[in-house]
Image (cartoon, rainbow, N blue to C red; front, top):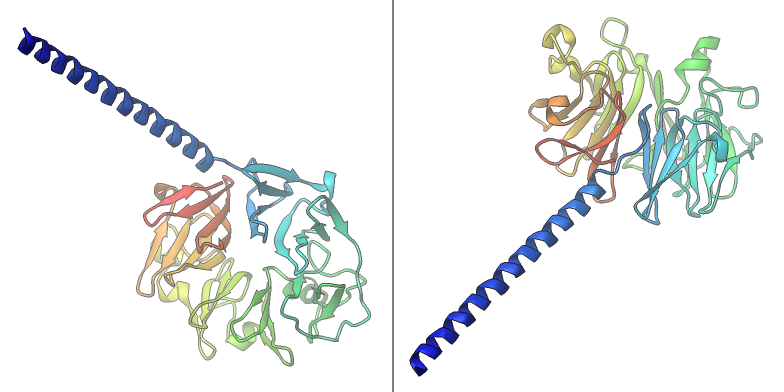
Length: 363
């Protein structure tokens, strides 16, 4: 009897053990599913913009800002989106560039005018100084802005130039150029890109028909004439530019494609790689709008209607809707603080990242 009883007890204990293990696994699977669902919700958080994403900024507090083509700006803070328009402090709903000054104030370069966010509210910044337009100087933390108009320059600005904020006041500085016609004054030297700090301390400004650099004492002005360009071999229509890790200047043009300038020679990269429509009979690298460099040194080009192109130093590869990139117009390429490239697009609007194989919508 004792042997039978012991066998029964062992059998009962074994069954109980199986039940406990089974329940534990089921609970773990359920927990994993819940975690996956939560993670999915975070990854799929999307901006409500339909016009396109034109600018980015990760600020010093860990917030992310998204500037739109014509719907204002959005703040991503603590996992929630907050939207701002002209109804609550923006000077214009087109937000071209976003910067943070050394005081932690966020600046918005709009189609018309400037706005600031002090951590509590958005407001239009109206103070301007025009008393020292030729007194150029450089500070480590200065930020720079285009003129106040959608295109061209107003009566107070008079001549082509930029606004400089040194942490205390906003002053207008004129470029040392003399436009020959009103069209040249209004369009050729109108700022079309964010400012860029070069590796040798030079500040670069991109206008539609010129790159203008200043190193604290001298100006370097790169034009069609300087590069030996004309209508036949492709003139400048600058939408973006980049100084890469090797010191090369890459210039994205809407029409003539991508130019590469190494300080001595200019190469039409689009022509060199045979990426014009007449060569490809499909997607091309002629309407280039944005440029970025990733952590591996690959150069990326965003286009209108032809997706994104990646150059690894040897060959060029095209990424489109088939690779997860839904947007047909890549306005901007932004490198995050973690070194990840974000691609801001339109038609349809969205923010994408590349995972090494294909594109995933991030916001």
